[in-house]
Length: 217
Ligand SMILES: N[C@@H](CCC(=O)N[C@@H](CS)C(=O)NCC(=O)O)C(=O)O
Image (cartoon, rainbow, N blue to C red; front, top):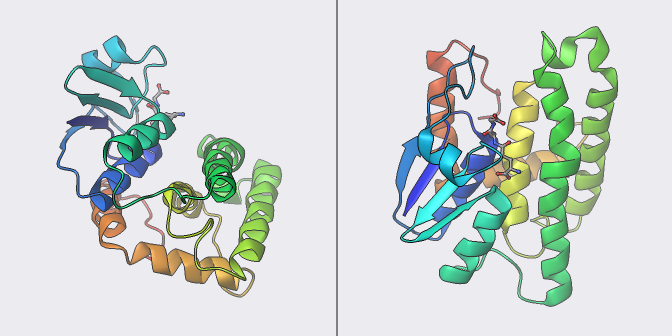
């Protein structure tokens, strides 16, 4: 199995973590990425497989798919153990919704900050920053009564762990005074071997590029 990703790809990191959690052997193919030119030029296999021209892309034999959430579904069907979705249908639906919200409700605010010099400290950062902090509040309330976002450790945790890692990079700190349950969850997830392996590689890349690294890691 081959996974195409980038050294700073939030969505690719989600898939890498899930594959490590399941003990799946894969070949990681990093596409060209540069802090100035970003994902240009595109890798020819990505252009051929994904009309959205984005990573992650997964190739497993004859199968060629893209999009981190679609890839999660394939990994779960093909390697059901250990499970990364809860079994009861309602809990599974809640976990899937949280995974989607992390990518499509929370993360767009982080992307907005990526476009502002100084990110969260830029004078125009206010609305995105407020939305990120409000989402932290929602997740903190959820985690007051449980250790993980939806049942046992799941794809929902993987997705939001990576999304908040990028929010922290964009100068929106998650204080343990304001969101104690969420901050404790983050430390728990950061200790997982599969997570550590992926974020350590990302931190190494950030350090080589002289970019700030979130302090809690
Ligand atoms: N919804 C997609 C988003 C993928 C995505 O935004 N990938 C970024 C890297 S993290 C990318 O390839 N960007 C390059 C581009 O859009 O040109 C997923 O979950 O995989």
